[in-house]
Image 1 (tube, rainbow, N blue to C red):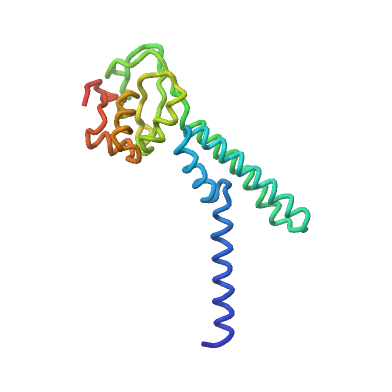
Image 2: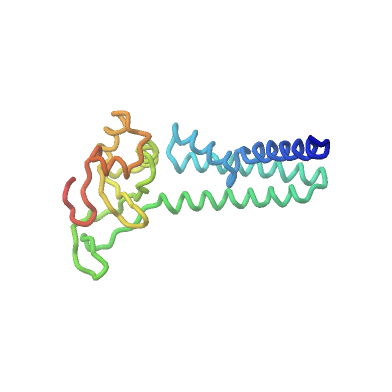
Length: 199
C-alpha cells in the first residue's frame, strides 16, 4: 500500500477517535450527556437526573470555553457556547414533557366532537410517555403525591395507571421494560383513558 494512503488512513482513524472522545463528553447534546443522565436516572428521579447532567454539561462547556479563550481557539469557544445553550434546552424539554397536564373543571373526558367519554379525576395527573421504562417513571413519580398517572402515546392519553401497580411491576423485575410493553402484555393493570374500563 502506498505511503500516502497509509498516512491518510492513519489520520482518518485519529479523527474518528477524536470524534468518539468528543461525543462522550458528559454534556448535552452529545451522547455523553445522555449516558450520564441515564446512569443518574437509575438512582434518582428523571427530572433530577436531567438537572444534574445539565449542570455537569454546563460546567464542561465553561471549561471548554476557557480553554478556547486561553489558546485563541475561537471555534472551541463557539462550540462551548452551543453546548451551554443546548444543555438549557434539554432541561426545558425535560421539564415540559414531564410536567403535569391540567384537567378541565368538568370531570369528564371529552372526544374531539365534545361528547363525554369517561369520568376523570378532578385533580391534575402527571403524564408520562408510554416509551419510558417502568423504573424511570416510578423514579420520576416519587416526588408526586398522586396515586394515579396518565400514560401518553404520541400525544394521546391512552391509559390511567395506579402508582402502586407500577411499583409492584418494578418489584417483580420489570423495571427496564417500557410502559407500552407492560400495558400491551397486561403485566400492568390500567384503566382505558377513553372508556374508563379496567384492563
